[in-house]
Length: 393
Ligand SMILES: [Zn+2]
Ligand SMILES: [Zn+2]
Image 1: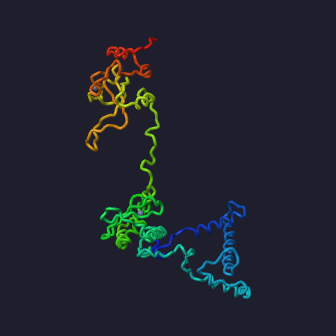
Image 2: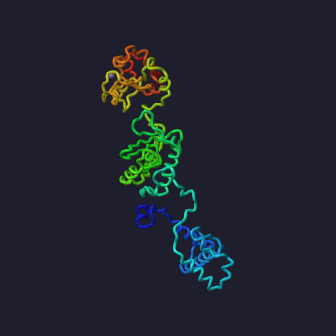
Image 3: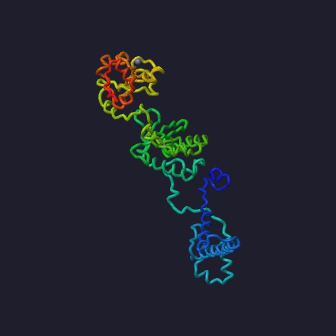
């Protein structure tokens, strides 16, 4: 049951938390009594007879409690009705029954706090949780929020203004992480007060101990509370559960755990070796065209369809700090790590970037590529002046 509905039903204001504990407790009493008879299933007639016995037992226990006997203890609010044991036994049977009947006719009394500290008074705040009349937040949490605000207000040093700010921006002590305070902004004129996104309560309820404490310090707590109630926000559980989680949550630490088969995905043992060198000393590697490769880094032309079929599907690859046009800053940028750049299989394209390039000395042919070359490939390469020594089979 929501707290609004409870308040409407007349369960008091602010409504106390509603639980099914009493019903659950009665259910377990009945179950346990049936269990003690070692019967997992009973027919309805048997059950009714047993239930009658259980009810009688319970009534007897209640009566005995008022004499200070039995398993149950009388609650604080009914303690004055206790009958001393010696007085009780002095009565005759009908007098005893009459005395117990009177007890059972007692009206229900408001529950008294069992723990004194639960209802502790908040001395440092100008408003109590009851006075705030906020019902969109569960009462127990509202109490905790005001308790935390009270704790913060206890010491002036718990709220310090941010250096150099002429607005009301404060660092506020956070009980959970003392080394990183919460940042709270507050407009004393409108009462608009905000906490930062690391605050779980703020994310969930748009109301927290930090904002209450600052609004109280700025003497605009009433305005802040009124503003909050007008918003009519209810708790956002998903926001609350996502507070303070790392940004890349739910993502795999590596980009991909799949390994695709095919010649374009040769294990990069050679790559790391060359990547440790600076871009100045990079050779070109002969490689096959692959689907994702689009443009020649030298002439900036797209690779044609013809270049995707043998024997024209050989290109050159070089590790380099790729220069690109950053769409964000609209300036030319250079990648920090060495990346693959691809060139048409001709001297001119590579020389556009690296004027010193020579086919005969600067091209490396790796074993795994060599094994995949057809005789047409070899012919083509030899016509370009590349000396390929392939063992004839
Ligand atoms: Zn906060
Ligand atoms: Zn080119």
